[in-house]
Length: 306
Image 1 (tube, rainbow, N blue to C red):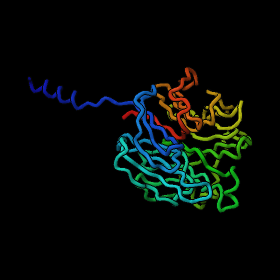
Image 2 (cartoon, rainbow, N blue to C red; image 1 turned 180 degrees about the horizontal axis):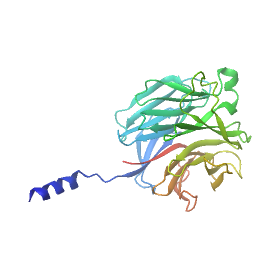
Image 3 (cartoon, helix red, strand yellow; image 1 turned 90 degrees about the vertical axis):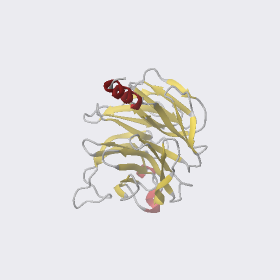
Image 4 (cartoon, helix red, strand yellow; image 1 turned 90 degrees about the horizontal axis):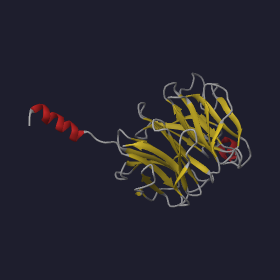
């Protein structure tokens, strides 16, 4: 074999073929599972979580991050954990009580940050990937009295890494039509605080119960699930963020929709609901299909090519 052929052979053997996987949280059994995008090869990779809700994948580092809501609504014992893609090397990143009830989580790999919403903490927060430098970016309320007001509960979160902005949901009471989606800069302006910010915009209000968010950065379109009553609730929705338009309902008849993950290059999305179903569909909502049906209670979901 010539030297040139030997080099080509080595490059070919070293080249890894990306494996497409969907990771999802089963809150009823406190497990993390993974499967192929068609629903095949389903495996449990992490057990003994504590009411997991949000999940993010760091492909470059080979890590999974997830939030644990803790033991109950009135208990300040939420946490964030990390493990390798295969579930090994598990460790606590944000210890219990450093966040109240963490929900959806997002990863900014380039910036080296984790962002999450804290429901009963009524906050949007972030930290470094190792859990250091925990910060509060948004504070919608404080104390036990405010905590009883679901309009202050922060649930979903996503980030615009190019314009350095955050988006989050505050869902409101069940089926009350008081849900809202907000936007603000990531950086707090001089002289302001998480509880007193002049840059907060309400993008959408009067929603049934907006839950998790995802952002299509390339097309600048926001996607979200909604748990409220039909016809606008139990849906997947989307809307451009740079023009004021009514949200487009893409998918209906979910059973308490929660998680959403986008594969923009592949023109597909994945959705979970609390009734134990996982769906896949095109980004415009067409070709909806069941990957799992009535298999537990699902919350967060993430798509990755590993």
